[in-house]
Amino acid sequence: MEYNIREARKEDMRDVLDLIRELAAYENHLDDVEVSVKDLEEEGFEHGNFKCFVAEVSGKIEGMALVYFRFSTWKGRTVHLEDLIVRESMRGTGLGGALYQSVVKYGHDNGVKRIEWVVSEGNKNAIEFYENTGAQIKESWKTVHMEEGGIQKNVNK
Image 1: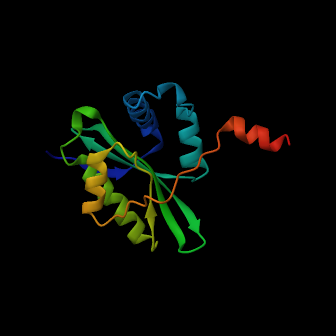
Image 2: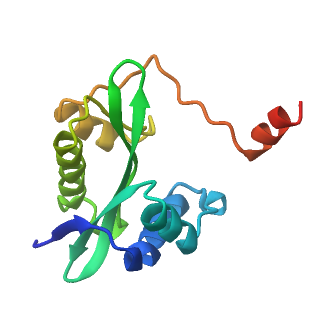
């Protein structure tokens, strides 16, 4: 299969949002997706808050990886992989691995000492893939989220 991995453009954000929604639906969380095409365009291309890579097959966007820089008090500048999504019909074709390698290369090219992301404990295929590439699954660390309700509760104290 021939594919092209490239940096996303502003006009790709509708397809990127479609991929985000497809993944959310697959995980039974479609109602949790609040981001819009406008949000993606503004945050990614006007404010520079993230970089996105897309995978094209026959001119159609079939996958994406969205990353941004973070700062670790232990390591310095790091890259956070927010999402790597491949359309369900294209899974198992190597497209996800190609996107993953583009993220690793991006981190390397930017001199980071860590690339980090979260993976669902139920996603055994992804966990095995990541471990085979040298990534470490940090079992003793827990991801913590504070959603909008918690933010409001704490601000109003």
